[in-house]
Amino acid sequence: MPISIALAVLETVVSVETPLPAAIAGYMLREFARPKEGSPCPVTPREREILGWISKGLTNREIAFELDISEQTVKNHLKNLLGKLGLDNRVQLATYALEKGWRR
Image (cartoon, rainbow, N blue to C red; front, side, top):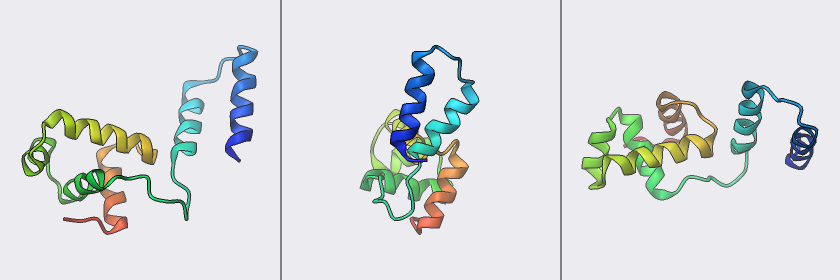
């Protein structure tokens, strides 16, 4: 479903105040956020570096030490990655990194 159609559907739902179950809304948002095949990679070089460490099994604290950044900064990067990629957890991030060949 093209994004323009999905947005029109969501606007209609919102305008008539029909409740949309959270599970459906979440699914729709994740689907539209997920990069499509052939689209440019939305991951920054720093996020890619963090994904490499995730794929190696490092904790947030260990990644922060390796990159000389705060643990909170690592958490922020992970949160951004989950949103950008439409993923739900750290295991999915590690799998994504391995599929892309971004292992450290």
